[in-house]
Image 1 (cartoon, rainbow, N blue to C red):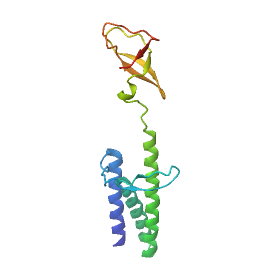
Image 2: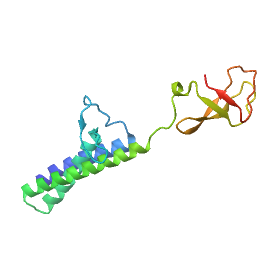
Image 3: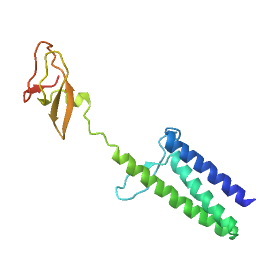
Image 4: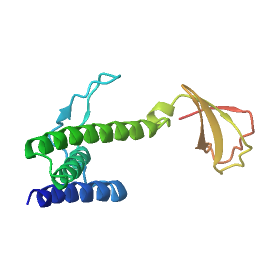
Length: 162
């Protein structure tokens, strides 16, 4: 009976984890900003979300299934499954944090752009959309159009963003 319990736990965790990874958004439940302090290098906390719980259940169930099929003692099986589940959950959380750090958006908001100077990169005919470089914290290209649609902009001109 014990192998079936571990298999069900593993299947439930793995199913939810795979659905969340491939279809996304299914595990975005908000539990009143509940966080798990994981310490680490940065010392900050990361969300303890449903995907990490699913990873824990997958690790717990798979290692428990392995131990029960190998006919280990029940206490050792459960203890080993708990340890492996925690390790697998922690590894999954670290991978998700790494992936999320890579999704940093460097674009400035429209409020940040107002008042900045930009350099035109291509000649822009009157009333058309062109391109300008904004040099702030980083150099970014943005689409621009002159507010007076009868004026054309030339490459190298500087404009004020309004």
